[in-house]
Length: 376
Image 1: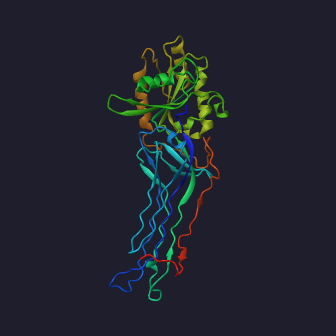
Image 2: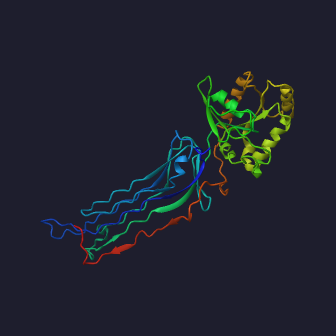
Image 3: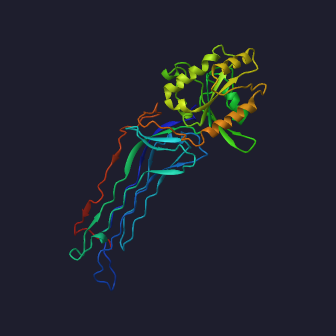
């Protein structure tokens, strides 16, 4: 559990621009070379980069302050200062960036093809005294200071990107089904809440297609009120193209399980109301399971219902085809419905004074005393 981190607060700041230089051209046969102060270098940017081989935010949990390098000052002979190095922060696919104070969505990496985004730009470098030359002021003794960088506290939230998400009560057979299709090695045991973190697996079909399956911990009645593990991990299902509702056919509440799951999902977010879905009756090999499956189909005639048994390998080919159809149904849809004013559900750590401070004093000049040594 400690190795899976899906929400974290970090403080990021871009680099300050370098100061402009006050310098003059001094050569043997050029007695009045004029101003030659170079501009300062631009500060480094804060860049978030998606890396497909990452699955968690554990690398951000213990180092939560990230600063880009400042730009170097300008030099004589109109030499510009070097640009500060960017601060590149790697993220797994599907992350959501929010402002920690206003909860405004800064960027959403909901699409797998997105590579990187610049969140904070570095400060511009200041002008050297070369820019202030003129017929009246032929030896300017001033230069611009560099523009300060930006600082922000960002709430990074991971939402797993998958094609089909498993929804069900504890011990409904979600992990067994995931292990059969994908060899994900999710833990299976005869007691509730064996799965405590989300698991991903890739189903490879016979025609070479890949369907990503997501297994999240089971939910209970009144989970929206904090019962069990609550709805903490349901956010990972908001990006799924379709949902697979797993119902234990041996459970005496099997006919009411689907309505219960829908109630808890809709209490979390209305996004789930429009997602494609399939009902999967598990443990078909147990007594009275087939009769319960027929009643389930009669109760929900407009929804596809499949019966499977992982133990006896019944109905798994039909279910695989249903997963492919769910993936195709949401292929063109946006996988990241974002609620702009929704505050994050929880945070791992709090940082002091999460205030965004952006100073913009670019253009302020620095007057130098004539007693100060001027670089040549």
